[in-house]
Image (cartoon, rainbow, N blue to C red):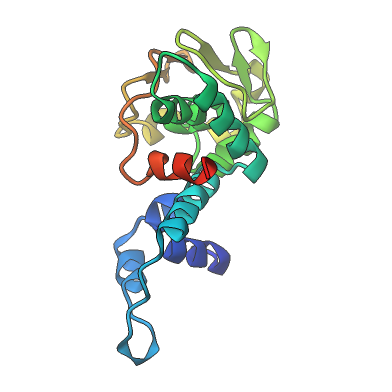
Length: 200
């Protein structure tokens, strides 16, 4: 059951923010009109940019300062489109990669899993959710964590899971790998609107 605070956030920012909002029941309730049959006013350009910024913040579970730093880093990088670089940085976070491998029900869950030290990256234990992974990096479930209930029945849970092509997880070895840079920016996110917000 989705909590009231999350429900309100999803109503304001869209179902892509939280996995639990991506249901037919939520979609039908989210399209309801305001009292008196009125529809909400369309946001201004600034309002739209602000909403898009909040979408990213809530989707990835990051602070305002973290997002601002990601934008600065992407804007200063040469040779790659700024929007693509920002998306790449967000998607390359360790907590997000673990989530995209299907090991957690949400980014919030995988953030806690990383913080509790359940993963090894290139033979080093990493407890920083924002740790940035690169192509070729190997992520393993820590030996002492393999018996945790977090990872029981993984083969059944991942049997029908289709993750993005740029990551891979082998249930047999409990080992994953970053195969490529994140691509195909999710249509739910308007990265350019966020960049315009910070360029004001």
